[in-house]
Image (cartoon, rainbow, N blue to C red; front, side):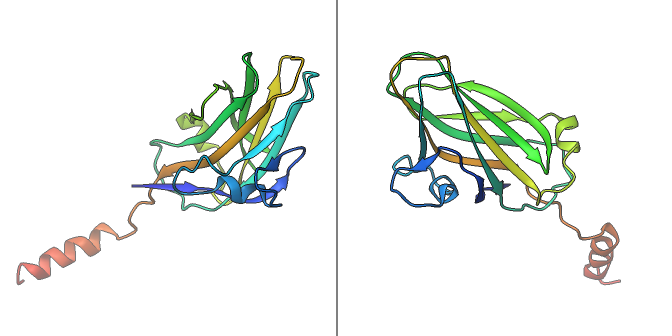
Length: 177
């Protein structure tokens, strides 16, 4: 099993808006099940600008494991056939854990950023994670939209905290001794 930390608040929204006009951007992309009908988007200004949005993530329990930590962002670019990039930056407080840039496609696609053991070991607390998502173009003329329909951090379930002595004692009792 895995734990997922979904966006739970907007920290800084910049020019990003929701497709339904609601004020909570995080609510449009924090669903457990993929839903491309609600999303956040930013319309480019055709000048090579960068458009960041910062979202806090819900807490997960420290898994005490170095397996399978990643960030998944489901995104698309609409209205342009050129290159539009989305930078995904996972932060712990003010420190960047990892950032990676993805080239967006013309249909919703999951973009997965995997963390190395060294990167996940630099996480000081799983309740202090934020995502900074930044759309950047290459100075296209005309307008286009970067859309994000889902984003989350994933890691393994937390380990059981039952001590081995308790398990051994239970086995001893079951043997009738």
